[in-house]
Length: 386
Image (cartoon, rainbow, N blue to C red; front, side, top):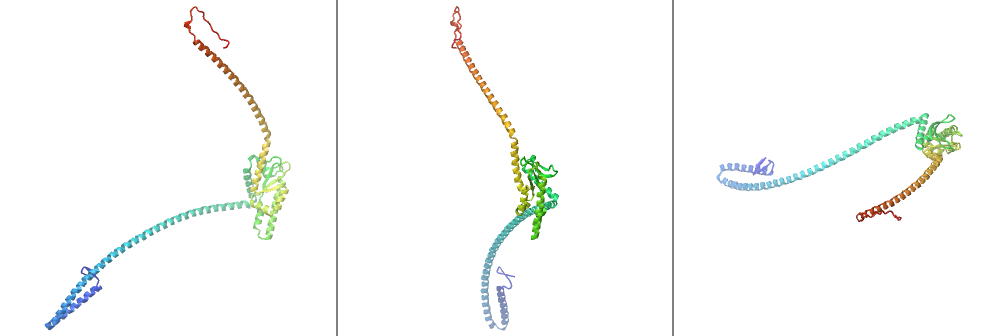
């Protein structure tokens, strides 16, 4: 780098190359002049003129160089101002881009955090649902284990029947596991009045036959499963009719409780003849829903019977109440008579009080000084008017 006239230039700048060429030309001319001086003085004059011309040209080149340096300085200043403005604009734009990126990143992080929170909440909900599903699966498996055994299935039906009866009837209106005169034990005996008399409810659950119907996938399998269902239900109906309908001890009918609405619906939808056979021997098939309605009707019957039983006591109490009301009227009359006598006595007391007041005022008006000592004292008695 070379500094000329207060400006800095590179070696390959055009101005430096031009000045270098001029300097080389001047050196070459000086060498020629020195050579020609020794040859002849006459030949030196043109060279001197040439040197003068070259000097003037060098002066012109110096002036041009100065003007060029000024122009270059102005251009450099303009470039510096432009670069400064451009740098400011770039800094502002970079700051704006940085701010927008910061806001975008902050918003993205906020949304990401919110989404992660919602995802965590949903995962917790899914975990709870999974736990509930696992618990329900365990309960379903337990229910399947219960229903797979006849004894446990019978206990399940009895427990369900007990819950329904307990909710529908008072405790003294039924007996669970009641023993009849024939030695047979009924699941539930409802103490209805005569007629119709105590009625038995026995729980039955033909689950195997129902599952066979559900599993049957061929026409022959459907027929065999239907026959199995008919056989099982008929056996239950016949057993209830023979064991729990005793003349003179129980009602002339009994109830067969099915603890499954699905089995009850299957019977009424596809085996209506079995239901009619039960009606014929007075064994009525009920489900948990229909048994609740039947028990509510029994509750109304029990209430009506108890009201009839208490009708005599109610009439007796009404007679006693009538006697009490009659005595109360007599005593009120006596009290009224006493009140009348008391009012009469008070009126007589008022009359005596007024008379005593009048006599006191009359005595107060007497003038004892006007009476002569020899005059006999006149005693004024009460008049007949008084």
